Image (tube, rainbow, N blue to C red; front, side, top):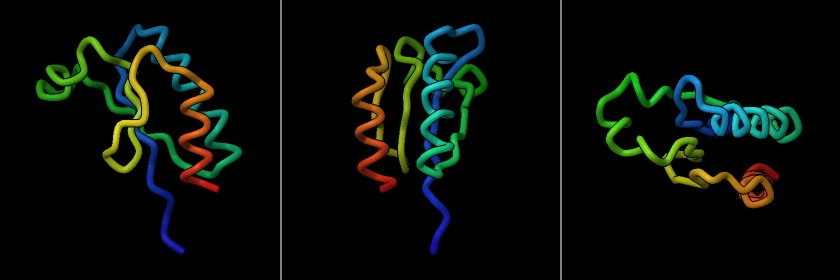
Length: 84
């Protein structure tokens, strides 16, 4: 069996919405068995240009699942669908 596709959280420091998204993903990761990979958009000029006003952004295998404002039920449904 192959390793699960990581869930990428595009984030930045001092972002309360990002912290909430991380808490949601951490709770689901324990149950569904995926790994959360946090990426600081401010460390990469291209990512900052793409996501500056959109963080947090959650992506799965390169496909965007959600961006701010994060709607937990929708994120949970998308991840449960992928990791069941």
